[in-house]
Structure formats: C-alpha cells, structure tokens
Length: 258
Image: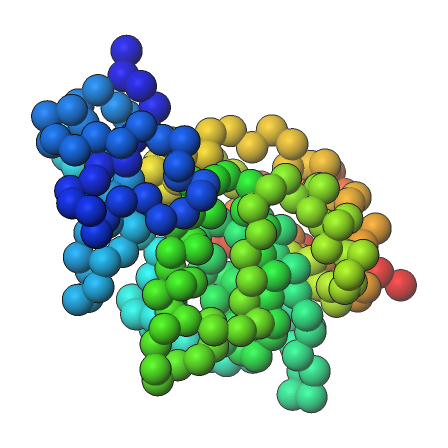
C-alpha cells in the first residue's frame, strides 16, 4: 500500500521551506514517487516557483497550486461585480464599511481573496498543514507583486483547529464577521473543478466536525456569521439562518447576531 505524501526535491533551491511540510519524507528521484499517494514540489509557474501538489487521478497526473494574482481570482476581481456580488451582500458590505473578517475554513483562499479585493481585512484559519502550506505559498508570492499590494498586509494565515483558534484570535480582536465554508460532497461539478476538489479531499480527508463550528462562530462574531453551502445542502448544524442569499449552485446562510 502506498504511503501518504512526500516532498520531491529536484535540487537545493527546491527544498521544503515551510515548517508544516518538514515532517514529509524527502525524495530526490522520480521513480521513488510511485511509493506515495501524492507529492509536493516546487514547479515553475508564470516564471516563478510555486509550491504544487500532484497526484494520479484516473490514470493521469494532476497538479494544483494557489494563485491569488491571475486566473479565477483575477477574473473575479476584474469582472465579479464588486459589492453587488452575493458574497458581498451576505457579509453586509457597504460603501462606508469594510468589516474585519475571520475566515475559519480557509481552504485554497479564493473567497478570502475575493473579500480582500473588496477592501476587507482577513484573518484566515486552515486546519490542514498541507492546504495551509499551499495557501501560505500563494500568499507569499502574491505579497511580492509590485503592482498589487492587496496581500502584503491585511491577509494573515493561521494554521490549527478552527474552534480553538476562533476563541484565541477573538481575544486579541473580535471579528465583525466569521465566514465558514466547510467541505461538502459535490453533487455536480465540471471536470476541472472535480479533479481539484478530489485533490483537496485527498489532502484534507473528511470534515465530520463542521457542525460544531457554527455555535463557536456565533459566540465570537461581533455582527454576523456567514456560511457558504451548496444549494442542495442542509443548514449547518441544522440551524435555520436569519436569511439566505442564493447564487448559482451555492447559497450564503447569514446568521445575524443581535
């Protein structure tokens, strides 16, 4: 049976640079990778090295990395509709109010990046050391961009269990909004997204304690808790929200704290 994951080091310039990956076995030869379910490596992307996770799916090698400056994130920044977007409405964004948001289920950081694009300060929690490593690498690369300083400040990542970190981070600064997007099995997805989500699931595993996050979030959010769910999914923790905002394929359940 294959071991879990490895780090593929091609030369001295591509050794693990994040503490969260230090426990992984390091391999230096391509033929050794067959012993693992997947592997991390630094690969050339857009003329820079990006931390990448690769694994075989359906007989083909598939890879993913976090990109906060181009691709889908950039498209949403340029063409997403600004504060008219469903996520902005769910978070209560107004022309004269940029809430401080705690994203307690960071994942690949796309929703957090969208909220940062809209002017919000973000603190992000990710419990998986593997996903956190990919996200931190994406944040680091984005923060070095000379033309866009969005991610060089006001966009901070924390690794650990969300229920614990929500409480700890709230002691230093209470978030206006706590944002939750727990994993949920996809019903129908495009082939590309499906492969990416399968890679994420391979890294993260199951998410059995998602329901427990809602009461913790409600106890520590200053204004509201926003939960992103697939349209077909039940309410988190079976708790009816104050209101729901529907978007294509998803909805945002909003719990307003009085």
